[in-house]
Length: 225
Image 1 (spheres, helix red, strand yellow):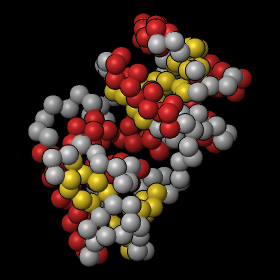
Image 2: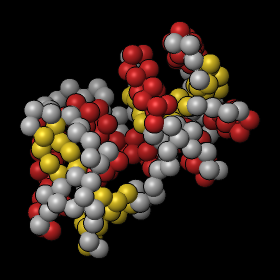
Image 3: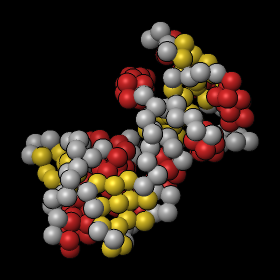
């Protein structure tokens, strides 16, 4: 299993390389975005671990160019940034998942294994679940052709639910992916934003697509409810 690790911090790059090598991954490394693009073009890879903040060409641009070239290699983004817009930008550029620094290597390995298992699946440019659609690039949400206005956080939450339609997602998963891996506030914030979403994307249309799974979390129905 060949994995490319891209990070401009030598200590981080070396630590990730060692952790992957211990798990018997075949590891290649790149110190910046330009080198990463050269390696991606020249090698056959099973996954890319890609830092966002790098000189010359940042991780978001690397991922965007990969996708524009038709390269669907799974990408796990690493980011030290707190802003949700950076994480959304990474996903919109075509990243498959992200991990916020500092992170545990156990978490890194688990997320990487999940990506490799899923493989290089095509990511739809517009997400659709029943009559609900979401365009990540244009930041547009519609239901049955009617536009729905969402805040940035509501949009990110709905996008994650739609990318995992039919799956039960725990509050912890939603906080890690929509808020921040290091978020230590009240997990009830998820319930609050789920209620906001229901009031905008379900109830005005007579739908019940965002379901509560008692004792587990939430699931977006993969059919109109």
